[in-house]
Image (tube, rainbow over all chains, first blue to last red; front, side, top):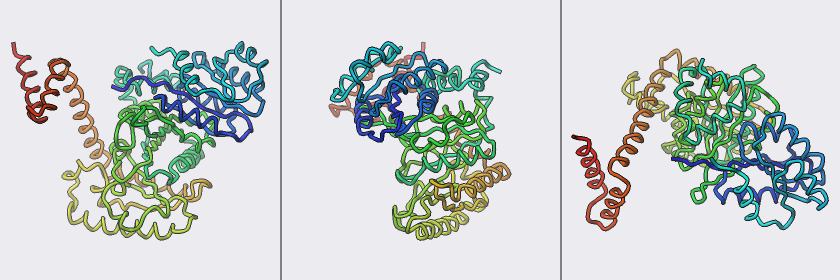
Amino acid sequence: MAERKIRVLIAKPGLDGHDRGAKVVARALRDAGMEVIYTGLRQTPEMIVEAALQEDVDVIGLSILSGAHMALVPRILELMKAHNLNDVKVVLGGIVPDEDIPILKQMGVSGIFGPGSDTQQIIEHIRKVVSLE
Amino acid sequence: MPPIVAAIRESRRALARLLTRIENNAAAAELAALYSFGGNAHLIGVTGAPGTGKSSLVNSMAKAYRAESKTVGILAVDPSSPFSGGAVLGDRIRMRDLHGDSGVFIRSMATRGYPGGIARTTIDMARALDAAGFDIVLIETAGAGQSEVEIASIAQTTIVVEAPGLGDDVQAIKAGILEIADILVVNKADRPGAESTVRALRAMLDFGRRAERVMHHGELMSIAAVPSGGEDSAWQTPIVQTIATNGTGVAELLTKIAEHRAYLQASGTQRLRERASLSAEIAERLRDLLLMRLIEQVGAAHLQAIVERVVARQIDPSSAAAQLLAESLQERRP
Protein backbone atom coordinates (compact mmCIF):
# COMPACT_ATOMS: atom_id res chain seq x y z
CA MET A 1 0.00 0.00 0.00
CA ALA A 2 1.07 3.64 -0.26
CA GLU A 3 4.07 4.42 1.88
CA ARG A 4 4.48 7.58 3.88
CA LYS A 5 5.66 10.54 1.80
CA ILE A 6 7.68 13.48 3.02
CA ARG A 7 5.46 16.56 2.68
CA VAL A 8 7.10 19.96 2.22
CA LEU A 9 5.50 23.40 2.10
CA ILE A 10 7.41 25.80 -0.16
CA ALA A 11 6.51 29.43 0.51
CA LYS A 12 7.80 32.86 -0.35
CA PRO A 13 7.13 35.29 2.47
CA GLY A 14 7.61 38.98 1.97
CA LEU A 15 7.39 41.21 -1.02
CA ASP A 16 10.10 40.22 -3.45
CA GLY A 17 8.73 38.71 -6.64
CA HIS A 18 11.49 36.30 -7.59
CA ASP A 19 10.18 32.75 -7.34
CA ARG A 20 12.50 30.98 -9.76
CA GLY A 21 14.64 29.49 -7.00
CA ALA A 22 11.56 28.32 -5.07
CA LYS A 23 10.23 26.63 -8.20
CA VAL A 24 13.55 24.92 -8.95
CA VAL A 25 13.63 23.54 -5.41
CA ALA A 26 9.97 22.45 -5.58
CA ARG A 27 10.66 20.56 -8.79
CA ALA A 28 13.81 18.93 -7.36
CA LEU A 29 11.97 17.77 -4.25
CA ARG A 30 9.19 16.37 -6.42
CA ASP A 31 11.76 14.43 -8.43
CA ALA A 32 13.12 13.11 -5.14
CA GLY A 33 9.69 11.60 -4.43
CA MET A 34 8.42 14.24 -1.99
CA GLU A 35 5.00 15.92 -2.04
CA VAL A 36 5.49 19.65 -2.32
CA ILE A 37 2.73 22.10 -1.48
CA TYR A 38 3.58 25.23 -3.43
CA THR A 39 1.84 28.33 -2.15
CA GLY A 40 3.21 31.06 -4.36
CA LEU A 41 4.38 34.61 -3.87
CA ARG A 42 3.83 37.20 -1.14
CA GLN A 43 2.76 34.94 1.69
CA THR A 44 2.39 36.40 5.16
CA PRO A 45 3.79 34.48 8.14
CA GLU A 46 0.19 33.79 9.21
CA MET A 47 -0.69 32.29 5.82
CA ILE A 48 2.41 30.09 5.84
CA VAL A 49 1.81 28.67 9.29
CA GLU A 50 -1.91 28.13 8.64
CA ALA A 51 -1.09 26.22 5.44
CA ALA A 52 1.58 24.16 7.22
CA LEU A 53 -0.94 23.20 9.88
CA GLN A 54 -3.71 22.21 7.46
CA GLU A 55 -1.35 20.34 5.16
CA ASP A 56 0.38 18.61 8.10
CA VAL A 57 3.79 19.05 6.48
CA ASP A 58 7.09 17.73 7.79
CA VAL A 59 9.10 20.69 6.52
CA ILE A 60 8.51 24.36 5.73
CA GLY A 61 10.86 25.66 3.04
CA LEU A 62 11.13 29.44 2.92
CA SER A 63 12.64 31.42 0.08
CA ILE A 64 13.57 34.96 1.05
CA LEU A 65 15.56 37.23 -1.27
CA SER A 66 14.44 40.57 0.08
CA GLY A 67 16.75 40.70 3.09
CA ALA A 68 13.81 40.65 5.47
CA HIS A 69 14.66 37.23 6.88
CA MET A 70 15.57 38.56 10.34
CA ALA A 71 12.02 39.92 10.65
CA LEU A 72 10.07 37.16 8.86
CA VAL A 73 11.73 34.03 10.21
CA PRO A 74 11.32 34.83 13.94
CA ARG A 75 7.65 35.69 13.34
CA ILE A 76 7.04 32.38 11.54
CA LEU A 77 8.82 30.41 14.27
CA GLU A 78 6.78 32.19 16.91
CA LEU A 79 3.50 31.37 15.16
CA MET A 80 4.57 27.76 14.71
CA LYS A 81 5.19 27.53 18.43
CA ALA A 82 1.77 29.04 19.14
CA HIS A 83 0.15 26.36 16.96
CA ASN A 84 2.20 23.52 18.45
CA LEU A 85 3.99 22.79 15.19
CA ASN A 86 7.06 21.83 17.20
CA ASP A 87 8.08 18.86 15.09
CA VAL A 88 7.99 20.76 11.78
CA LYS A 89 11.46 21.62 10.45
CA VAL A 90 12.22 24.97 8.82
CA VAL A 91 14.63 25.26 5.91
CA LEU A 92 15.64 28.64 4.52
CA GLY A 93 16.90 29.51 1.06
CA GLY A 94 17.83 32.81 -0.54
CA ILE A 95 20.29 35.54 0.28
CA VAL A 96 21.38 35.35 3.90
CA PRO A 97 24.53 37.16 5.12
CA ASP A 98 27.04 34.88 6.88
CA GLU A 99 26.69 36.70 10.20
CA ASP A 100 22.95 35.96 10.34
CA ILE A 101 23.35 32.20 9.86
CA PRO A 102 24.31 31.25 13.44
CA ILE A 103 21.56 33.49 14.83
CA LEU A 104 18.91 31.88 12.61
CA LYS A 105 20.11 28.38 13.47
CA GLN A 106 20.02 29.31 17.15
CA MET A 107 16.37 30.34 16.66
CA GLY A 108 15.57 26.90 15.29
CA VAL A 109 16.09 27.00 11.51
CA SER A 110 17.36 23.55 10.60
CA GLY A 111 19.14 24.33 7.33
CA ILE A 112 20.16 27.42 5.36
CA PHE A 113 20.98 27.21 1.66
CA GLY A 114 22.39 30.26 -0.10
CA PRO A 115 22.80 31.01 -3.80
CA GLY A 116 24.56 28.24 -5.69
CA SER A 117 23.44 25.49 -3.32
CA ASP A 118 23.05 22.10 -4.90
CA THR A 119 19.47 20.84 -4.78
CA GLN A 120 20.87 17.42 -3.85
CA GLN A 121 22.21 18.93 -0.60
CA ILE A 122 18.74 20.25 0.21
CA ILE A 123 17.16 16.86 -0.51
CA GLU A 124 19.67 15.06 1.69
CA HIS A 125 19.22 17.57 4.48
CA ILE A 126 15.44 17.14 4.44
CA ARG A 127 15.67 13.35 4.38
CA LYS A 128 18.03 13.48 7.34
CA VAL A 129 16.02 15.82 9.57
CA VAL A 130 12.63 14.27 8.92
CA SER A 131 12.47 11.23 11.10
CA LEU A 132 10.18 8.75 9.44
CA GLU A 133 8.50 6.33 11.72
CA MET B 1 -19.18 10.50 20.71
CA PRO B 2 -15.90 8.66 19.96
CA PRO B 3 -12.78 10.62 21.01
CA ILE B 4 -11.55 10.93 17.40
CA VAL B 5 -14.76 12.68 16.33
CA ALA B 6 -14.61 15.06 19.28
CA ALA B 7 -10.93 15.72 18.53
CA ILE B 8 -11.37 16.60 14.84
CA ARG B 9 -14.34 18.84 15.62
CA GLU B 10 -12.33 20.62 18.29
CA SER B 11 -8.88 20.89 16.76
CA ARG B 12 -7.74 21.64 13.21
CA ARG B 13 -4.39 20.14 14.08
CA ALA B 14 -6.08 16.84 15.05
CA LEU B 15 -8.03 16.90 11.78
CA ALA B 16 -4.87 17.56 9.75
CA ARG B 17 -3.09 14.71 11.53
CA LEU B 18 -5.97 12.32 10.93
CA LEU B 19 -6.01 13.21 7.22
CA THR B 20 -2.33 12.27 7.03
CA ARG B 21 -2.97 8.90 8.66
CA ILE B 22 -5.87 8.25 6.29
CA GLU B 23 -3.66 9.11 3.33
CA ASN B 24 -1.04 6.66 4.60
CA ASN B 25 -3.58 3.86 5.13
CA ALA B 26 -3.04 3.92 8.88
CA ALA B 27 -6.45 5.01 10.17
CA ALA B 28 -8.78 2.03 9.82
CA ALA B 29 -9.99 2.25 13.43
CA GLU B 30 -10.62 6.01 13.25
CA LEU B 31 -12.51 5.68 9.96
CA ALA B 32 -14.68 2.97 11.46
CA ALA B 33 -15.42 5.21 14.45
CA LEU B 34 -16.28 8.33 12.48
CA TYR B 35 -18.33 6.79 9.66
CA SER B 36 -21.68 7.01 11.43
CA PHE B 37 -21.04 10.67 12.30
CA GLY B 38 -20.99 11.68 8.63
CA GLY B 39 -23.71 12.04 6.03
CA ASN B 40 -24.55 15.67 6.71
CA ALA B 41 -22.17 17.48 4.41
CA HIS B 42 -22.94 18.13 0.78
CA LEU B 43 -20.11 16.55 -1.23
CA ILE B 44 -19.45 18.55 -4.38
CA GLY B 45 -16.96 17.42 -7.03
CA VAL B 46 -15.30 19.95 -9.31
CA THR B 47 -13.56 18.46 -12.33
CA GLY B 48 -12.42 19.48 -15.80
CA ALA B 49 -9.37 19.84 -18.01
CA PRO B 50 -6.20 21.52 -16.72
CA GLY B 51 -6.35 25.30 -17.06
CA THR B 52 -10.12 25.65 -17.06
CA GLY B 53 -9.96 27.46 -13.70
CA LYS B 54 -11.09 24.78 -11.25
CA SER B 55 -9.03 26.14 -8.33
CA SER B 56 -10.19 29.70 -8.88
CA LEU B 57 -13.77 28.48 -9.11
CA VAL B 58 -13.42 26.46 -5.89
CA ASN B 59 -11.97 29.58 -4.26
CA SER B 60 -14.91 31.77 -5.25
CA MET B 61 -17.46 29.05 -4.43
CA ALA B 62 -15.96 28.72 -0.95
CA LYS B 63 -16.15 32.48 -0.46
CA ALA B 64 -19.80 32.48 -1.52
CA TYR B 65 -20.64 29.62 0.87
CA ARG B 66 -18.88 31.48 3.68
CA ALA B 67 -21.09 34.48 2.95
CA GLU B 68 -24.02 32.11 3.67
CA SER B 69 -22.28 31.16 6.95
CA LYS B 70 -21.65 27.60 5.74
CA THR B 71 -18.37 25.98 6.69
CA VAL B 72 -16.27 24.56 3.86
CA GLY B 73 -13.73 21.75 3.69
CA ILE B 74 -11.68 21.53 0.50
CA LEU B 75 -9.73 18.58 -0.89
CA ALA B 76 -7.55 19.67 -3.80
CA VAL B 77 -6.05 16.81 -5.79
CA ASP B 78 -3.06 17.10 -8.11
CA PRO B 79 -1.23 14.30 -9.94
CA SER B 80 1.73 12.35 -8.56
CA SER B 81 4.71 11.84 -10.82
CA PRO B 82 4.57 8.35 -12.30
CA PHE B 83 8.38 8.25 -12.14
CA SER B 84 9.41 9.61 -8.75
CA GLY B 85 6.11 9.30 -6.90
CA GLY B 86 6.56 12.93 -5.85
CA ALA B 87 4.19 15.79 -6.63
CA VAL B 88 3.90 19.54 -6.77
CA LEU B 89 0.54 20.51 -5.31
CA GLY B 90 -0.26 24.03 -6.43
CA ASP B 91 -3.97 24.53 -5.90
CA ARG B 92 -3.51 26.71 -2.81
CA ILE B 93 -1.98 29.43 -4.98
CA ARG B 94 -5.48 30.30 -6.22
CA MET B 95 -7.09 29.97 -2.79
CA ARG B 96 -5.25 32.64 -0.88
CA ASP B 97 -8.45 34.65 -0.35
CA LEU B 98 -9.60 31.96 2.06
CA HIS B 99 -6.71 32.45 4.43
CA GLY B 100 -7.44 33.32 8.04
CA ASP B 101 -11.01 32.01 8.00
CA SER B 102 -11.57 29.33 10.62
CA GLY B 103 -14.65 28.14 8.72
CA VAL B 104 -12.48 26.90 5.85
CA PHE B 105 -10.04 24.00 5.83
CA ILE B 106 -7.95 23.31 2.72
CA ARG B 107 -6.01 20.13 2.19
CA SER B 108 -3.91 19.35 -0.89
CA MET B 109 -3.35 15.75 -1.88
CA ALA B 110 -1.59 13.80 -4.61
CA THR B 111 -3.18 11.01 -6.63
CA ARG B 112 -0.43 8.55 -5.51
CA GLY B 113 -0.78 6.37 -8.56
CA TYR B 114 -4.57 6.03 -8.50
CA PRO B 115 -6.26 6.62 -11.86
CA GLY B 116 -9.33 8.75 -12.39
CA GLY B 117 -8.26 12.18 -11.14
CA ILE B 118 -8.53 11.46 -7.42
CA ALA B 119 -6.57 9.34 -4.94
CA ARG B 120 -7.67 6.02 -3.50
CA THR B 121 -8.07 7.69 -0.10
CA THR B 122 -9.94 10.81 -1.29
CA ILE B 123 -13.30 9.29 -0.35
CA ASP B 124 -12.13 8.58 3.22
CA MET B 125 -10.61 12.06 3.53
CA ALA B 126 -13.99 13.49 2.47
CA ARG B 127 -15.69 11.32 5.11
CA ALA B 128 -13.36 12.74 7.76
CA LEU B 129 -14.20 16.34 6.74
CA ASP B 130 -17.88 15.39 6.76
CA ALA B 131 -17.63 13.93 10.27
CA ALA B 132 -15.64 16.98 11.38
CA GLY B 133 -18.81 18.97 10.73
CA PHE B 134 -18.15 20.92 7.54
CA ASP B 135 -21.40 21.83 5.77
CA ILE B 136 -19.84 21.70 2.33
CA VAL B 137 -16.99 19.47 1.14
CA LEU B 138 -15.51 20.60 -2.18
CA ILE B 139 -13.36 18.04 -3.98
CA GLU B 140 -11.25 19.45 -6.78
CA THR B 141 -9.88 16.69 -9.00
CA ALA B 142 -6.55 16.65 -10.76
CA GLY B 143 -6.84 18.16 -14.22
CA ALA B 144 -8.97 15.58 -15.97
CA GLY B 145 -8.90 14.38 -19.53
CA GLN B 146 -11.84 12.71 -21.15
CA SER B 147 -12.34 9.64 -19.04
CA GLU B 148 -11.47 10.62 -15.46
CA VAL B 149 -14.95 10.04 -14.16
CA GLU B 150 -14.12 8.53 -10.75
CA ILE B 151 -15.23 11.70 -8.93
CA ALA B 152 -18.88 10.98 -9.78
CA SER B 153 -18.84 7.96 -7.49
CA ILE B 154 -17.81 10.11 -4.50
CA ALA B 155 -19.56 13.43 -5.06
CA GLN B 156 -23.28 13.98 -4.68
CA THR B 157 -23.14 16.85 -7.14
CA THR B 158 -20.52 16.77 -9.89
CA ILE B 159 -19.55 19.99 -11.62
CA VAL B 160 -17.64 19.77 -14.89
CA VAL B 161 -15.76 22.96 -15.73
CA GLU B 162 -15.11 23.92 -19.34
CA ALA B 163 -13.46 26.99 -20.77
CA PRO B 164 -13.78 28.62 -24.20
CA GLY B 165 -11.46 27.51 -26.94
CA LEU B 166 -10.64 24.03 -25.71
CA GLY B 167 -12.46 22.00 -28.33
CA ASP B 168 -15.06 21.91 -31.04
CA ASP B 169 -18.54 20.46 -30.98
CA VAL B 170 -17.28 16.96 -31.71
CA GLN B 171 -15.42 17.04 -28.39
CA ALA B 172 -18.75 17.83 -26.78
CA ILE B 173 -20.50 14.71 -28.08
CA LYS B 174 -17.73 12.29 -27.19
CA ALA B 175 -18.49 9.99 -24.29
CA GLY B 176 -16.83 10.48 -20.93
CA ILE B 177 -16.39 13.37 -18.61
CA LEU B 178 -19.26 15.52 -19.88
CA GLU B 179 -21.68 12.68 -19.18
CA ILE B 180 -21.00 12.76 -15.44
CA ALA B 181 -21.87 16.44 -15.11
CA ASP B 182 -24.81 17.33 -12.90
CA ILE B 183 -23.95 20.94 -13.63
CA LEU B 184 -21.80 22.25 -16.47
CA VAL B 185 -19.81 25.42 -15.93
CA VAL B 186 -18.33 27.48 -18.73
CA ASN B 187 -15.68 29.44 -16.87
CA LYS B 188 -13.74 32.42 -18.25
CA ALA B 189 -17.05 33.48 -19.78
CA ASP B 190 -15.59 36.88 -20.67
CA ARG B 191 -13.20 35.24 -23.14
CA PRO B 192 -13.94 35.10 -26.86
CA GLY B 193 -15.68 31.89 -27.87
CA ALA B 194 -17.66 31.47 -24.65
CA GLU B 195 -20.98 31.67 -26.52
CA SER B 196 -20.03 28.95 -28.98
CA THR B 197 -18.81 26.70 -26.15
CA VAL B 198 -22.17 27.12 -24.42
CA ARG B 199 -23.97 26.39 -27.70
CA ALA B 200 -21.96 23.21 -28.30
CA LEU B 201 -22.62 21.98 -24.77
CA ARG B 202 -26.32 22.81 -25.05
CA ALA B 203 -26.57 20.82 -28.30
CA MET B 204 -24.80 17.91 -26.61
CA LEU B 205 -27.25 18.01 -23.71
CA ASP B 206 -30.35 18.11 -25.93
CA PHE B 207 -29.00 15.19 -27.93
CA GLY B 208 -28.18 13.21 -24.78
CA ARG B 209 -31.53 13.77 -23.11
CA ARG B 210 -33.50 12.45 -26.05
CA ALA B 211 -31.47 9.27 -26.13
CA GLU B 212 -31.92 8.75 -22.39
CA ARG B 213 -35.68 8.95 -22.46
CA VAL B 214 -35.84 6.24 -25.06
CA MET B 215 -33.42 4.02 -23.25
CA HIS B 216 -34.47 4.36 -19.67
CA HIS B 217 -38.04 5.58 -19.66
CA GLY B 218 -38.66 6.05 -15.97
CA GLU B 219 -36.82 2.89 -14.96
CA LEU B 220 -34.61 4.29 -12.23
CA MET B 221 -33.61 0.96 -10.76
CA SER B 222 -32.29 -0.59 -13.89
CA ILE B 223 -29.70 2.14 -14.32
CA ALA B 224 -28.73 2.65 -10.72
CA ALA B 225 -25.37 1.08 -11.51
CA VAL B 226 -24.58 3.98 -13.81
CA PRO B 227 -22.66 6.41 -11.59
CA SER B 228 -24.50 9.47 -12.82
CA GLY B 229 -26.02 11.24 -15.74
CA GLY B 230 -28.19 8.45 -17.09
CA GLU B 231 -30.76 8.12 -14.36
CA ASP B 232 -31.79 11.74 -14.23
CA SER B 233 -34.74 11.91 -16.54
CA ALA B 234 -36.12 14.76 -14.47
CA TRP B 235 -32.89 16.68 -13.83
CA GLN B 236 -31.94 18.96 -16.69
CA THR B 237 -28.20 19.55 -16.52
CA PRO B 238 -27.87 23.33 -16.41
CA ILE B 239 -25.06 25.30 -18.00
CA VAL B 240 -23.76 28.14 -15.86
CA GLN B 241 -21.35 30.78 -17.14
CA THR B 242 -18.85 32.08 -14.62
CA ILE B 243 -15.82 34.32 -14.31
CA ALA B 244 -14.22 32.69 -11.29
CA THR B 245 -11.59 35.37 -10.77
CA ASN B 246 -14.18 38.05 -10.00
CA GLY B 247 -17.08 35.89 -8.79
CA THR B 248 -19.46 36.52 -11.70
CA GLY B 249 -22.03 33.74 -12.01
CA VAL B 250 -21.01 32.03 -8.77
CA ALA B 251 -24.25 32.95 -6.98
CA GLU B 252 -26.21 31.31 -9.81
CA LEU B 253 -23.95 28.25 -9.58
CA LEU B 254 -24.67 27.91 -5.87
CA THR B 255 -28.40 28.16 -6.58
CA LYS B 256 -28.14 25.34 -9.14
CA ILE B 257 -26.16 23.23 -6.66
CA ALA B 258 -28.85 23.73 -4.03
CA GLU B 259 -31.54 22.84 -6.58
CA HIS B 260 -29.63 19.70 -7.52
CA ARG B 261 -29.35 18.64 -3.90
CA ALA B 262 -33.07 19.20 -3.38
CA TYR B 263 -33.77 17.17 -6.51
CA LEU B 264 -31.50 14.32 -5.35
CA GLN B 265 -33.33 14.10 -2.06
CA ALA B 266 -36.87 14.58 -3.32
CA SER B 267 -36.56 12.11 -6.20
CA GLY B 268 -34.82 9.41 -4.17
CA THR B 269 -31.93 9.54 -6.63
CA GLN B 270 -29.46 10.22 -3.83
CA ARG B 271 -30.33 6.95 -2.13
CA LEU B 272 -30.01 5.02 -5.39
CA ARG B 273 -26.68 6.58 -6.26
CA GLU B 274 -25.35 6.05 -2.76
CA ARG B 275 -26.38 2.44 -2.71
CA ALA B 276 -24.73 1.82 -6.11
CA SER B 277 -21.45 3.51 -5.22
CA LEU B 278 -21.28 1.96 -1.75
CA SER B 279 -21.82 -1.53 -3.07
CA ALA B 280 -19.11 -0.91 -5.67
CA GLU B 281 -16.82 0.35 -2.91
CA ILE B 282 -17.46 -2.69 -0.74
CA ALA B 283 -16.73 -4.95 -3.71
CA GLU B 284 -13.47 -3.11 -4.38
CA ARG B 285 -12.36 -3.32 -0.75
CA LEU B 286 -13.31 -6.99 -0.63
CA ARG B 287 -11.20 -7.61 -3.74
CA ASP B 288 -8.23 -5.90 -2.07
CA LEU B 289 -8.65 -7.94 1.11
CA LEU B 290 -9.05 -11.23 -0.70
CA LEU B 291 -6.02 -10.52 -2.86
CA MET B 292 -3.88 -9.72 0.17
CA ARG B 293 -5.11 -12.84 1.98
CA LEU B 294 -4.50 -15.00 -1.06
CA ILE B 295 -0.97 -13.69 -1.62
CA GLU B 296 -0.24 -14.29 2.06
CA GLN B 297 -1.50 -17.82 1.71
CA VAL B 298 0.38 -18.88 -1.40
CA GLY B 299 3.52 -17.00 -0.40
CA ALA B 300 5.52 -14.40 -2.29
CA ALA B 301 8.08 -16.94 -3.47
CA HIS B 302 5.50 -19.22 -5.04
CA LEU B 303 3.80 -16.22 -6.64
CA GLN B 304 7.13 -15.15 -8.11
CA ALA B 305 7.68 -18.68 -9.48
CA ILE B 306 4.32 -18.54 -11.25
CA VAL B 307 5.16 -15.11 -12.68
CA GLU B 308 8.37 -16.59 -14.08
CA ARG B 309 6.41 -19.37 -15.75
CA VAL B 310 4.12 -16.80 -17.35
CA VAL B 311 7.14 -14.77 -18.49
CA ALA B 312 8.56 -17.94 -20.07
CA ARG B 313 5.21 -18.47 -21.81
CA GLN B 314 4.68 -21.86 -20.19
CA ILE B 315 1.30 -20.74 -18.86
CA ASP B 316 -0.96 -17.80 -19.70
CA PRO B 317 -1.84 -15.06 -17.14
CA SER B 318 -5.44 -16.10 -16.81
CA SER B 319 -4.62 -19.77 -16.12
CA ALA B 320 -1.94 -18.65 -13.66
CA ALA B 321 -4.54 -16.70 -11.66
CA ALA B 322 -6.94 -19.65 -11.73
CA GLN B 323 -4.18 -21.98 -10.53
CA LEU B 324 -3.27 -19.67 -7.63
CA LEU B 325 -6.87 -19.48 -6.55
CA ALA B 326 -7.29 -23.26 -6.73
CA GLU B 327 -4.14 -23.77 -4.66
CA SER B 328 -5.23 -21.34 -1.97
CA LEU B 329 -8.63 -23.04 -1.70
CA GLN B 330 -6.98 -26.45 -1.38
CA GLU B 331 -4.67 -25.23 1.37
CA ARG B 332 -7.59 -24.01 3.38
CA ARG B 333 -9.06 -27.54 3.63
CA PRO B 334 -7.89 -29.65 6.58
